[in-house]
Length: 86
Image (cartoon, rainbow, N blue to C red; front, side, top):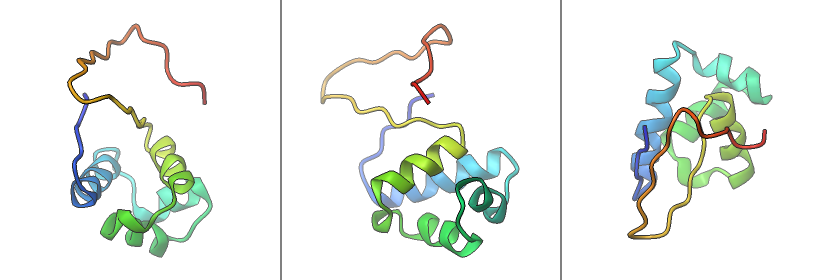
């Protein structure tokens, strides 16, 4: 599923939703990327204050990917598409 984001507030909602859909606690996700639970809480609360590198780590830990799409471009993700090189 592709989810277009237009604001940090939307990112906040979706990060938390991704984590909860996998039945992970903030502490479990933090352990995956080497930070404390409080850092995950901070990121979920204010994702505008996270570095791109740490956001990428968090997305990877949640088995999610960042996809940049030019305005007006149509994108279709299929199961046959190879995953990003991780």
